[in-house]
Length: 92
Image 1 (cartoon, rainbow, N blue to C red):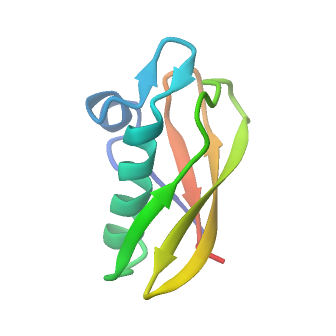
Image 2 (cartoon, rainbow, N blue to C red; image 1 turned 180 degrees about the vertical axis):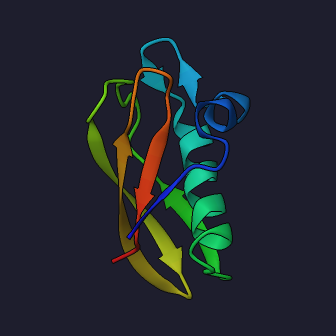
């Protein structure tokens, strides 16, 4: 199951996820936590860590680590388009 960032590109833009040709690391980390809480119903989510300098390129993917209910998990993030819209996969 995959959930899109609420508000799409506008949401990503407002969160500061788009900076030139790369995603803003801190904004993506905040977005991952928000999506897991709001869209996946995970109440205890913290410590999202995503790699720096991820390209704003359609189809680009990368993994972030996050703590869910005290357990380390990974999520896959996939860039949907050049407007910095991205989707976050289910924690695993």
